[in-house]
Length: 141
Image 1 (spheres, one colour):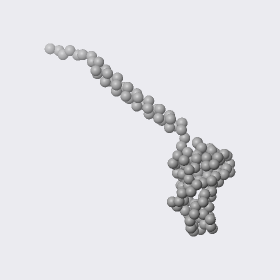
Image 2 (cartoon, rainbow, N blue to C red):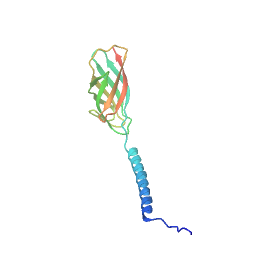
Image 3 (cartoon, rainbow, N blue to C red):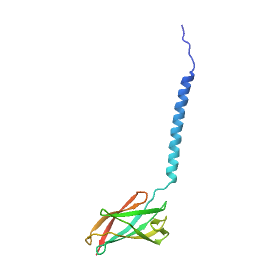
Image 4 (cartoon, rainbow, N blue to C red):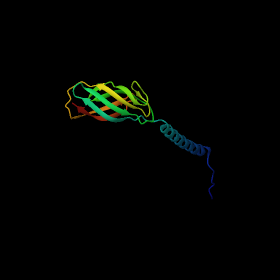
């Protein structure tokens, strides 16, 4: 006796619709997060030069913010010691520790210690968002 073929039951249709809906939501979330990530910029900072005076422990940094967003400096670390930076604008807008896009700043900090002239001391500039930008400071006599 031949078997009767049936169409899809409502449960099978519901399962297929649920799978399609889950895939659509996943693709939509991927597209949304990709779009949001492309519209927000990550801060960048170039440390052009770094000099440390062996006499008084004054650190001089020349910083450039290439963009795409303004950066705010939280602190500077040199050889494990933390210090606050004081910045002045050389080009563009510098407001306290906030350096605008395209601005160039000369920043100074006091780093106490005994420094040997001619050596290189590792350090990093830390932004308010937690990003850090490493540099090597040349110790000047």
